[in-house]
Structure formats: C-alpha cells, structure tokens
Length: 115
Image 1 (cartoon, one colour):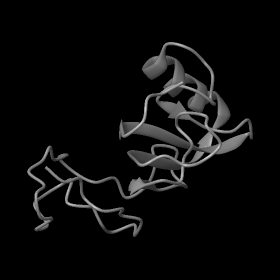
Image 2 (tube, helix red, strand yellow):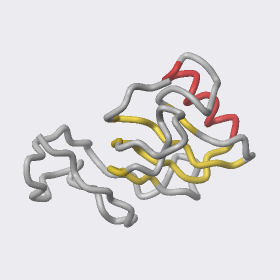
Image 3 (cartoon, rainbow, N blue to C red):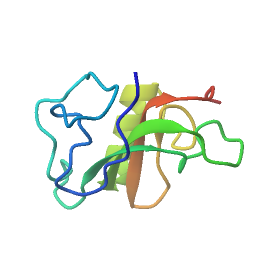
Image 4 (cartoon, rainbow, N blue to C red):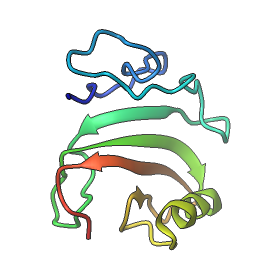
C-alpha cells in the first residue's frame, strides 16, 4: 500500500478524507479535513517527505506526518506530553521548536528508527 503524496494546499486533503484516486491508498480516512488549526490562525498539513530529522542523524528522514502551524508553546508541550509521555520537542513522535509560537510535527510513520 502506498501513502498519499504531500498535501500543502489549505483546501486539499491528500486523499485522507475520501478516495482521491491515489493509487494503492485504501485508507484510513478522516471524517473532515480541518480548514484551520484548533488555535485559529494556522493550518494543518499532511506531509509525505524527508523535511524532518526524526532519528536525529542530521538529515531529513522519509516519513509521513502532520504539520500544525502557529501552535502556542504551552499547547505544543501538552501535545508532546500526551503523545510521547514527555516534554522534549526534539525527540519522539512529536517535534517542535522552543519558540513562543511554533509548528508542531506529529509523526504517523517513518522509514527509520526514532532516537
């Protein structure tokens, strides 16, 4: 089964809401694609690329993940704690910076082992 391609347009859903004809993709699907983040200003993207260094090797790793933009730091830490069981934005399945407002990357699946 192939993962859908990256989807960064606000209106697209990468085939994760309904079957967009992505060859080899048979779900799962979400009920509705969010038009904005829960914090109002940012958007939610699905990515299938190598832009995040998931294994801390110094280079990006092939992975499928969500990017949620313009997340307050306290909320990023809560997401991290809920998913990873710790607040450490540079490791685990949740990544984000130390900025007051940041993008949060939530891993779905990667081709490398996490550190």
